[in-house]
Amino acid sequence: MAVSKAELDRRIARFAEACKRSGMKVTHQRTETFREVASSDEHPDAETVYQRVRGRVTGISRDTVYRTLATLESEGLLARTGALGGPARYDANMDRHHHFVCTVCGTIRDFTSRELDDLPVPKTVKAMGSVESAQVQVRGICLSCARSKAGRPGHRG
Image 1 (cartoon, rainbow, N blue to C red):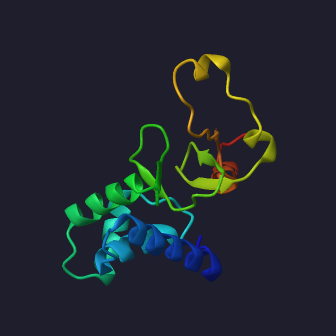
Image 2 (cartoon, rainbow, N blue to C red):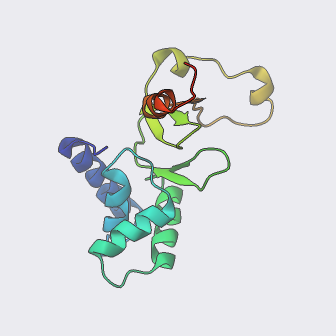
């Protein structure tokens, strides 16, 4: 699903400002790679980003897109997320949020929750080191997959 134009503009402005602060050049390839992740909330994997950017930026290499994603992650402009056992997926939503992951189709959806934000970090975790952030991943079957499953012959609802 596409993010609103206002949200995309906010993300692009954050990207440009972060590049300026770090001295990183705002190249066309870098901008288009970031834009591809920032323009939707579907959390694409690196190969999907490459295929889509390649359609707009002729001559861009897979290596350039993969390295750019790694750079953007290290600069705090993208977060890496993903479902267990699947490829790394990228998220440009840097606001506090959590993820719902469909165990059937792999869809990842963002959601916010004050209750989850306020969960205390256990002392046993704090004893392991300094906690910088915490995020909850809720796993289940999305509505689309549940409807598909319910409509299959032989299914007992």
